[in-house]
Image (cartoon, rainbow, N blue to C red; front, side, top):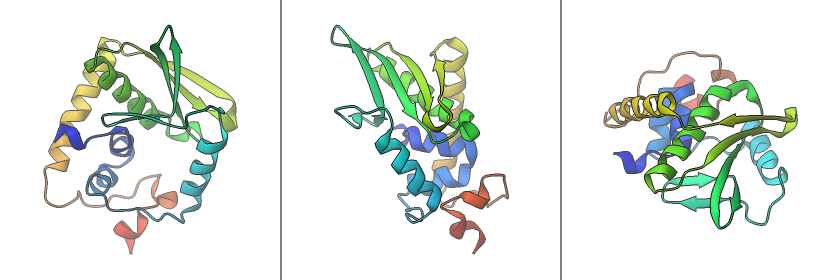
Length: 166
């Protein structure tokens, strides 16, 4: 099931395992959700670059710096640091997958509205943490039905709330 896990599923899992299950089944969230729209606008307008996204296998990188033709830094752009932990794990997942491909890079979380940056490295504790999270995600995704909904702080703004609370 590892090939279905991507950065968005990792980020979703940290916030809400049910959302991760829905994403894995390609159940589309409400695309008119104002928070999704705002996120797309920030993503498109921040950190101008020639190439908007770089896709390698199941890794979709928002921003990449190269030095002598080698990837040195990968960046993940988020609208706010409110969900910093899920963004951090998403970026650790990208660094982990790149390392599996033989690419060593550092990560940078970028919160343009807050003018905030946070450096992320893939050290031994981060590797152990992401491997543990991947195992938990695989366990949930193997189930034929999603986990039951649970009210959490993200429900109010969630683009999937109709799947849980209608």
